[in-house]
Length: 186
Image (cartoon, rainbow, N blue to C red; front, side):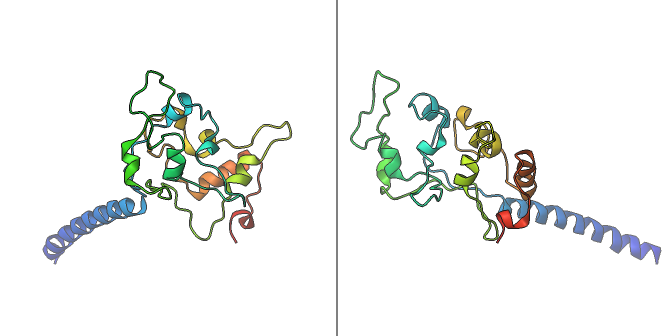
């Protein structure tokens, strides 16, 4: 009896352990968002060289109704990187023509987003980014609050990690914003 338990039980436990590890890693991979990034992008160069400055709304602005645009369209890129513009320039502040953009229509957004907001949550970038303390300072900033140091980032990788509800609640508490469910969930 004890031998049967050893011969069946131990291999079964080992098999379940490996199955658990494999399924957990597979789940983590599927749940993690791995967006396509077919066009290389250097945030640091755009924020320093080209005068976009620390205001992320230069490329990631709002529609007239206040909704956040998210990732820019190719048309927004070609407004600076003219399709007929120069390939080389002695002036490092001149945006050069990017041949890779010619593969896309003006309305395309070729970058995939790291952020996938679940349907049960409501988040308004405009409300958060325009909220101010009594002394006039902004309560939130793109880099410090959610997106990490994009000003020194030379690619489009996610810097601060996955946004989980606990991080949102911590930020709400720090910025003295209500953590009541109805604030973010309808």
